Length: 64
Figure 1 (spheres, one colour):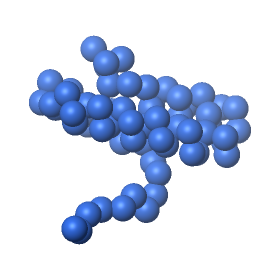
Figure 2 (cartoon, rainbow, N blue to C red):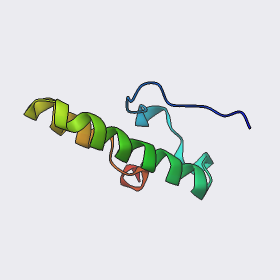
Figure 3 (cartoon, one colour):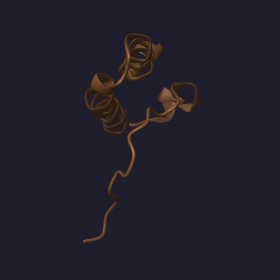
């Protein structure tokens, strides 16, 4: 089967996401992707950037 492979890891801008329009599976996917971004990229950053990354990759429930 054909599919997609992630080539880069960057957080999705949460301001552009209308959580009310997402299914639970879609919310879970975004949260899992953000956790993957934080785990892979976070250790490579300095303290200030790591704090920013932690903020922008919080679970979507934090938007409410």
